[in-house]
Image (cartoon, rainbow, N blue to C red):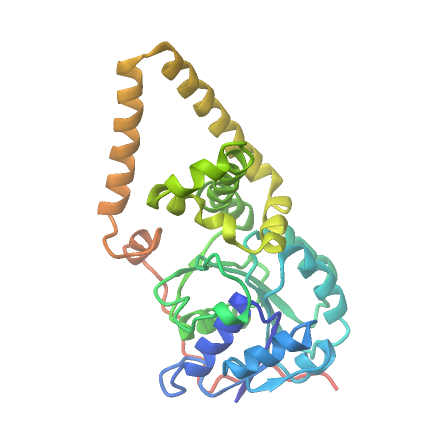
Length: 322
């Protein structure tokens, strides 16, 4: 039996635990599992246990990772540095550590600096989520058919990569290997910029003296664009602060677009405005048509050649030093 410790029992951590425990041991590449959960707030861990996301509640970080083969860090991004530092002296030799953070370059550097040489680290980021937070919003199908980014490096042990990929497949997601810096540059545009746009829309309109009169008129368009503003502020804060280079580049691009659009609208430039709208419509329609009923990015992955990796059923974990 493989023991998996999940550190942080919020939406992603609890959903991951539920998906792992719901998996059929005969079909999962990991086989039989035991899932241990820990959160700095005991009530959160209890709630996750009540949702059948974990087999056992750990009272301390050391207790959570004792004899664990895989450790998943599912805390807000900036908390990961302290978690890695605290974990370093408690991890059993041969353990594999991964995370679910929305930014990867900084987390991978922290892991390289703080974790002992006796353990391996594979960065991870499931391209799945929702605006609600906490274990109460968890869903065992949250990762099903989702792209799950993995940021292994040339020095990552093969068995660690195989183990984390097996975990990803067990929860129904599709592993997608990508460089940490490249990951951050891409998600800044397709994930973090939309978050900032959502917050900006709500801030600009919500701070208006006319908001009370405007609010009853807001319908599906406002609801859809503003959805991300209902997310966990702590989690979102850390995402924005740990990807400054990638995000500021896309903010600059958006500013240029808005300035141009403002000038065209003020000048009544019909042709330019129509061209802008037609181009956006064409781009989005083509994106939707290329992957019907699929999550963003999934169609490209399913058409990309993949390397089959062996099942981990019967896999022998490296012997631990006594």
